[in-house]
Image (cartoon, rainbow, N blue to C red):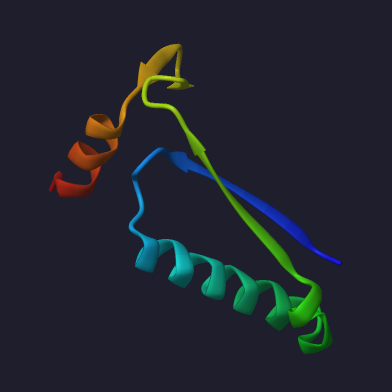
Length: 72
């Protein structure tokens, strides 16, 4: 029974994006393991408060993520 946990910034994903992410993660897991596990594959999206996530010793915010997405 696969259990996948994904952490995102609070309010980073819309409801539609969350639903699509859960679907695609489930698709990926069952394509590698077995389609028989689809109904027992758990995907948990956990939201992390803005500024409570760090990389390279620096706290990141949702604004940092948005800037990464729009950067060329």
